[in-house]
Image 1: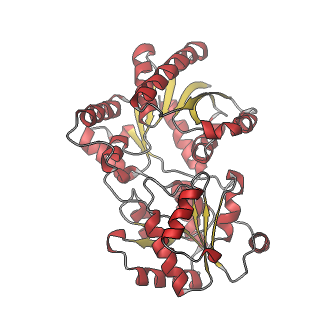
Image 2: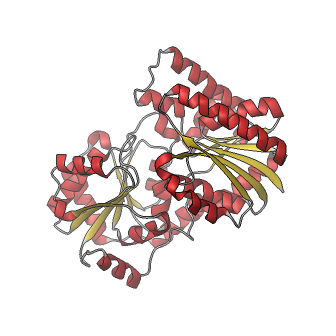
Length: 399
């Protein structure tokens, strides 16, 4: 049994950490001793005991630090030093052979530990982190800080023993720009578990829908998760408003944890019919119920160079629940998935024809002619968590 140190900037008490870290580690702990160190946000610490209970039956030992960005780069440096101290102790006590680093800051920590202890490094990139800061305006291309961080980023790619990317586009970019061997990079998009994400049967769907106060004829467009940052929620609301003007049965449901005030301000800005809009939240375990009663999942992500390395988690969850996605071009491998598999509607945000887009979406929902076997083929080929676990296990054994 291998002893793995897993470093994650994403907290296990966050929905993303629950679905995209713990869901994998629980399965990987069957053949490995997992020593997990994560950063938890203060507002999520109330869920710590729930996570401890969840992982108690498995070979997972979890330590965490409270995440803080109060003092910018100084907070980051302080947290890196704390993790290095904690991880060093773990490496010596648990005979760690490999470090699985999820994103750039954990990979930087892992590289320091690799230099000290000679452990192997798996760099699990979750996007082009430095380019994201450039694209968002947080860094300037000609600044010294950007050049230093970009040099560090490139060094981490070349010095890692293996790299996992979310997209084939990212793999191609790294092979070409960093001269990395194709065999040293594995593509594992954000996946989902059918044990967690599965569609309710017709009776359950109708019952749950009615319990929320919806009529049988109501058509629900759903947005799950964050609406800020890279999400183009403004254009989503423009589309929803147009849809509501075309079809009086269209309703909009937003499930989100911490941004309700911001969401309601935008809803007011775009003057949506609030009689047909709901903003709420749900647990990770109940999300599949809402996806089951929805008619389409809407999520727009601002396209950019850095987003070529991104894979929306919600897309895999939608596919698992046979829910059509309404999304946009210019993000990761989404065009490949959406054009090869008929599982939704693809929008070009640069040329957004609202009347045409809304008519197409209403027609798509009304006809509801999707082939469930296509969803199954896409899921089993690209987004099945069990497939992802097999790939990670293969990398662990290789390292």
